[in-house]
Image 1 (tube, rainbow, N blue to C red):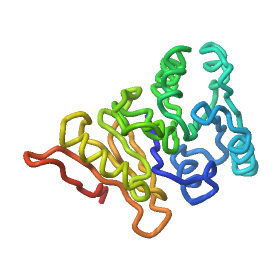
Image 2: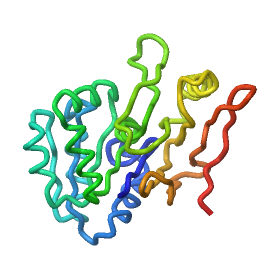
Image 3: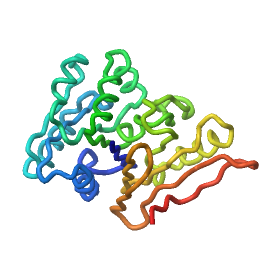
Length: 225
């Protein structure tokens, strides 16, 4: 069971194509069947077009899974898929919609069936126990994810200063558990809930555990050597 969490970049951002190649490699398939969920961006047509263009020649199929699908329809469309990729956007709205429509149960079953899950930003952090979210109004706040990986997650760690500060504060206060913070240009693969591989598509991009200490919080680089 694999999940690939991307801090920022890839085809939806039109940056760091190495991250897309990393996702494909994790499937172990030469021409995988790929599905894309764009709930967090309200099925933005530009991102859907980028998805189909990016994988047209290196996958056996590119399937967009629109927000309008029922849970039953979603499960049917996911049959035979090798890689499910979730795009970024409004994480809170996305997870709420999944729970209302029972997509969360379908996606959990999909994960447990062995389909590789991947995603960027919202699509990266949604799989964890907790993540930080900001609607653009008011401070960032911890929210509950799908709980497939037993820790917190934070994207865009290298580029969003306010997220960096808010994460350390939340962890120090106990509002967030130990959290994996991932830079733009970096991706981490989890197997059965544990990190096993990392891709750095730009110099210095990495991932870091942010954890509580007696005096506040500390940051420790993820090392898989």
